[in-house]
Image (cartoon, rainbow, N blue to C red; front, side):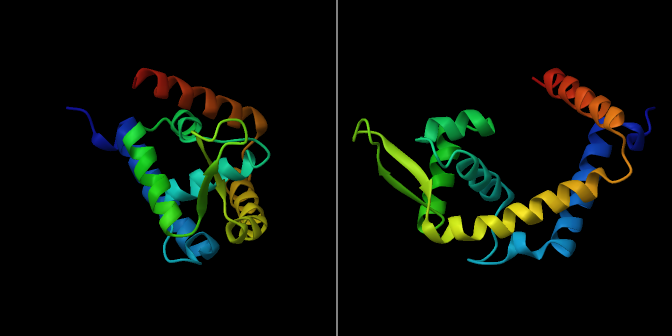
Length: 147
């Protein structure tokens, strides 16, 4: 019988839990503001921030985050309700609603972006560039195998 502790699923789950605890304890900025922000919301905010100079639509979010249309719709609706993003008519076709960060959220992004860089650097500490390259290659293979 296989030892569950020697399985990918067990190790990924444990890493996920450990990272979640680490982020909550060391980086409270990700949990401040308008009540608790879900990881999915923070990922979406990062996506909108990186694409702030483009027209971004719900379909773009679905593709970028690999989520369904209904999941993206609910996510954006909650974020609008919480004042994180706003829907505005497209500059090219008013039938389409562009999604962008509110001014308040944009002003918070500099602090969040700095904290995210620090977090990433702390996780990569003492790991060589070559080891990271192998790590990401293996993750991509596991991802592909799970499809």
